[in-house]
Amino acid sequence: MDPDSVRGVDRVPHGGSDDPDLLDFSANTNPRTPDGVDAVYDGALDAARSYPNDGYPAFRDAAAAFVGCDSESVVPTPGGLAALRLAFATTLGPGDDALVPSPSFGEYAREVRLQGATPEFVPHDEVLDADPDDYALAVVCNPNNPTGDAYDPDAIEAFAARCRDRDTRLVVDEAFLGFTDRPSLAGTEGVIVARSLTKLFGLPGLRAGFAVATGDPREALGTARRAWNLGTPAARVGAYCLDQSQFVAATRDRVASERARLADALGERFDVHPSEAPFLLLDTGARDPADLVAAARDRGVAIRDATTFRGLNSHVRVAVRAPAENDRLLEVLASV
Image (tube, rainbow, N blue to C red; front, side, top):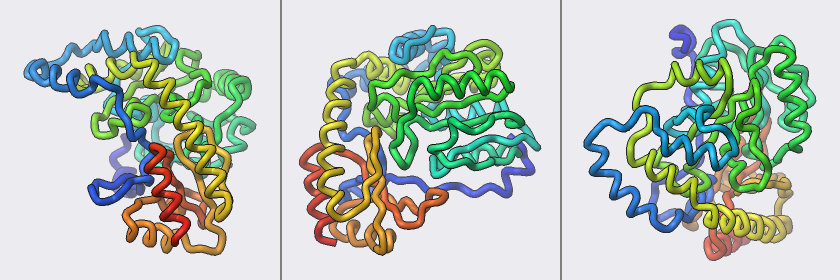
């Protein structure tokens, strides 16, 4: 991280609410968690009296099986954002340029700037056609946040090959890929994949995730990773969740069904962007998004003002939750 750059970089807004009186559609996390998580967490508390095994063998094995790579390629991190920071910090330096999609997750540009590098923005739906030459790093968010677009596997593989040819490190954020049945790029040469467990398994406060890389990038990530960077409860619960294939399959089915239902209903009032993620991006048209957010909040529902994403000025984003909760969202948005 570049000390001179830190002082000129602001924090970025995110969704999420800790107000127990609000039904939160502003954060894209699963409203359900796998059965048995409480017992695993409770059992890990006693083990947390000692330092964890810094190799995290059980967690790495579970992560590798989940994404289909070798366990040696897995680098445990406290959340997907920590994996992204590790990838950027081991790749970028002052004066470098990074190719960043827009609109997309605001932390990409922030993390690039923290390293003293410069983000160069490209439309998210054109990023795979961009020329990665002269960039130290390129970022792809798959599916993209906040639009929900997922990329064709062949196209993203071809882009990864072009990045390799030009010595450009490709970082693929797959935080929401677990909600789909699309293949991961984990283990692909020249690619660093960042994964988050907390969205798919409904545990954002646990802070568990991992990076995947091979060769020199893997060595750099492993060297730069802080010792004991994943707490024992996070490691044990994470390994347990990654093995819950039935929960994952049920979640994918529910999200796909409810997303389609929400899109049809909301399409009567908003322009709804097609999505393969657990959220929908809505164009509010002439309606001020801030007014819509405030009106929904007054009725006990939190939705995300998406104008905080670069290039969006008339949008909100809503998560896909459980059926009864989604009914409440539709009721509220129909009345404001």
